[in-house]
Image (spheres, rainbow, N blue to C red):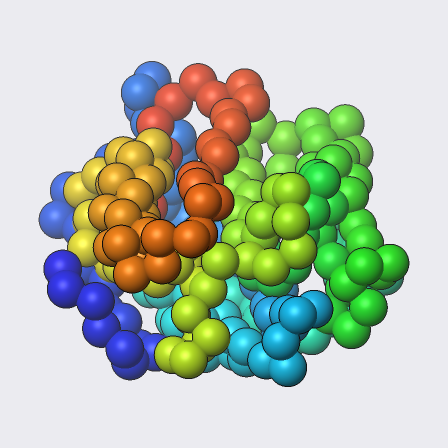
Length: 234
């Protein structure tokens, strides 16, 4: 699928339902579950540039909705506001089969940052994960939980296009489920996203040879026993 600029990116519908077997997680509830998206501005300390990623957040809302999720987008929040919102999700009922948290903005050294004072207003990623642990969030016990942190791990600025207002990871990630979620698992979608991102960044490095940062995504799984298929449209 070639890259498209519109927010309303269409997701291909599944034909075969892959759900609730010894190989596949149950993924047929309506809605599939809740998805919460946090989107921050990207601000550079060395240049007077503010990258508004609101449209990227809306695109993912459109995609998650098509994957069957009840999706909410939260813009420009402090770390305290983020944690407060997530705590509400962690203590609420979750009749759906899964749960998604997505964050796009600044990050460094295992932290995500608040929108306005990102050097000091930080939230450890581990704190977010702990909220939804098997022990702390009983409503999501044994259900797949997906956490997507689109931010740098060791520097301040997420790698993005400040002119066209998108992150490279977000652009790649939005197009792969749109094309492949109808018949590929989440693990396969992640691998295709990584391959697409590597191809995109190879072009960027040719244009900006002084940029020696790799910007490679990191993926971790915990207690995963089955494949997860989104089954859009079924």
